[in-house]
Amino acid sequence: MISGAALRLRTLQDHLGSLGGRGMEPVSSPLTTHVLDTASGLPAQGLCLRLSRLEDRGQQWTELTRSSTDPDGRCPGLLPPGRVRAGTYKLSFDTEGYWKTRGQESFYPYVEVVFTITNETHKFHVPLLLSPWSYTTYRGS
Image 1: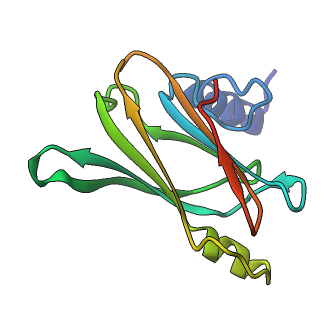
Image 2 (image 1 turned 135 degrees about the horizontal axis):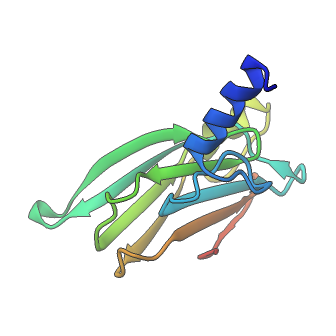
């Protein structure tokens, strides 16, 4: 017999998708990010970020969502399935706020990663390796 708590946990896991040891990332999420604090060697928990898309009319950025990284430094499900469309996107990371909460001075007040999606059926993972004095990003898998 399954306890009430175990049943609720199983229902939540089914709703979010397979956890697969990668945090609470929904399997069907088409856009994710993961931030690692290379100065500490730990995930960057609690880093605030925004996702925006460049709109053709007037070349203005339209904010799609605001979020923050989880205890594993991940921000899964930035766009729900079906909301990805071809275009130019921007992830804006509030690195100054992150470092200030840790009592650390930093050089970059924010990091903006601009990327283009041409195939709406692909999945996109944008990792960020972060220190107070540098950052690196790439298209992950």
